[in-house]
Image (cartoon, rainbow, N blue to C red):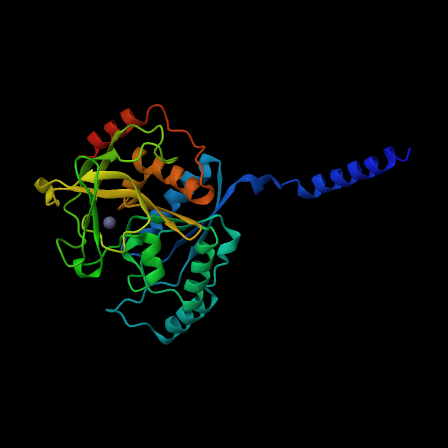
Length: 311
Ligand code: ZN
């Protein structure tokens, strides 16, 4: 009896622990915070597309935080609007620690310094960040942000340029040399996988067509701790740089993971097969370091058909 009693107590204790630890139904989902509210792109149209694709996938729960609107230099704010913006920014204090991944669809005014500091800490401690298209245009003066994003939309004097030659070798062009950020007219283009073993690209077709979209070139920044997953050739026929531009990559920042996806100028290109699967798998990876979302068997064919239709 003496032997039995303690183990029964232990069992009861373990049972109680199990009950306490039993997750709520949504706890096994990845919680995502999308930040928007200012952008030179149609954030009000792309955010619902992104939220919907994440929620429909079933692995994610999504909150959206919308910042106060960007002041319009041509239309001075009324006193009431100014007051509302000030109050809005005073309340803009996201608790990043509640989320496994922050998804930026934001390109606008600087966040309050206190928010930047909290975000740096969150990322240093192992947070996740997804950069969506023009989100890399923002915060060019924020040094730690530049380290997280690696390459930003800015001029040649502001940072190094990273490209990939035809043999797959990374080429670093020092700041001040060569072109700065830009893009030619939108057109369908091919994405080439440069890291086949990364969880995000593993199992994806080595070449994947993407619909009519912007092909960013000449992005500039510290360009450190990057893993280039996909490039696209910026053809001189469409005012391109004539080299392979990194379009999809990851960045290591402290213990944090950053997924950068430069596709998705508008809601249409965002919803198409290549961009959708990259955002789903990239968001899961930024949150957990792993990818369980399967690559659809029809991805290559669907993407090619969508690209042909978008010409
Ligand atoms: Zn764009």
